[in-house]
Image (cartoon, rainbow, N blue to C red):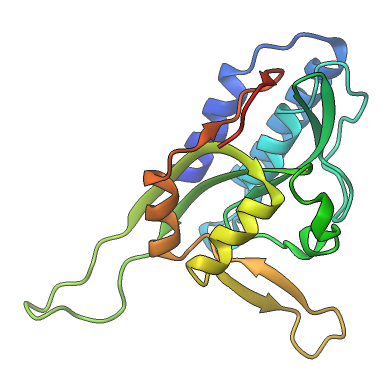
Length: 202
């Protein structure tokens, strides 16, 4: 297993089902991992960790047992006494749906963001002729308002556009950008826990 597959397996193994729907989601997650393990190294599913993370962090009573389509609310989080919509984003994913949320509602909508990826070995030789080694990046899941998340994305220029020339252009968060990754690691953030009730989110 590579790093992402190992982290995905840990997610599945550490998951404790609390409902019959959780059991189904855990089985679906294991199927996704098994499919990826059967693929050759050059054809791995780069979105594997995100798909499994999203599945296993739904409310236990949610009847959704598959990964949601783009643009649909991934889950709801309880802030105070109110359930708020929340989207799950991992690594480098589409964020066009976040921009569609009216600005006056972005402080009442949330994002859970996590990074789990392998930074490839450097392609340019250093002065001593060696290459920067591959790195394993992991950011534990953090939760913040849509407004704060987009602020961080723009602060570190961690966005790009995918789908050029297809008529389906959409902004994409750059989870592969080192400055952005390191800034989020240092940020005083609220960590996401499934089923938690939040009184304040940093």
